[in-house]
Length: 331
Ligand code: COA
Image (tube, rainbow, N blue to C red; front, side, top):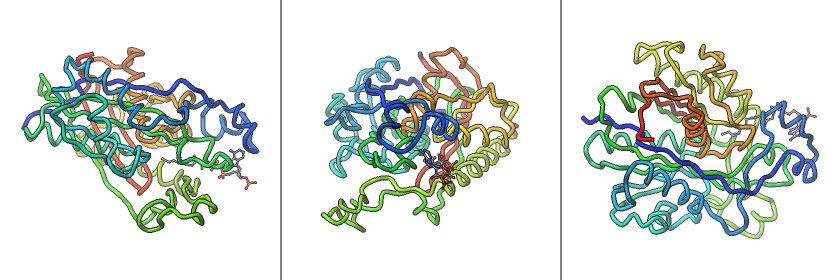
């Protein structure tokens, strides 16, 4: 088996900002409440007519270049997204044409906020087995397309953004993706969902009138599940690898709420200075948060070759994922 690693990373967020002050004009909320309860100050939002594949394209082309590759070298494209451009064709197919990855096959991966972790896990399997050499993994969402900007309990949380990684063969057995712990718990699915628009409740005048094409969530239930299961998945992963939280150099969790991340880190025993937080500037970009946070950590010089990195995600489903890796990219 070959060791897979993240060879390169890149991100893209649309330029337009939606600040807490902007939201104060839309719903009954305050900058103080949003900051205190979520840690968010602003989010990036697309202009009308911009889809997930457009954000993914910008991030992907840079990631491919940073890996020292051309689009022709990409074997597989995996797009983790909850907001595909269309139900079909897939965003992966649209992206394949936009970036000119002539030899790639690919698909969309529906795991909500675990889209990137599940994508990297899948890519690592393809690379390790020899089925692929270069897999482009994207976590991208245009959450503003499914957010109800009259609902203060959801509209303050989400933003738009994309991250892309090339997963390839490691040049060093000690560097790369070491292990993962993924699981789902479908019993709590209704706590975070978009009720209409699928086969169960196709779009109709009634579903639009009842605003069922927007994110609905039981915030408290999601909050508690996220803390408990971020900790649980990471703990299992560390124990299986005979590691402890103090061995972790950087903890990059899905950015859903500052309080969720810090509470999970504390329960796990990861020191606050090892936790990456950038939710204040992006909000929750769903599948985009982990690659965006990881890319920022690289740019900020917080990662050096050989560092032990723990990624963790909890998303609608519920989907839970965690990945342990030793850092080492071409960048
Ligand atoms: N501005 C002001 N007040 C708000 C508000 C807002 N944007 N949203 C909710 N409130 C109010 C509520 O109506 C409630 O008022 P009440 O006490 O008069 O009924 C009060 O604030 C507390 O609501 P509660 O839901 O208990 O707040 P909370 O501390 O749990 O924070 C969330 C709400 C949504 C921020 C939090 O539960 C959360 O982050 N949950 C996880 C959501 C998530 O991560 N989703 C994506 C997962 S990938």
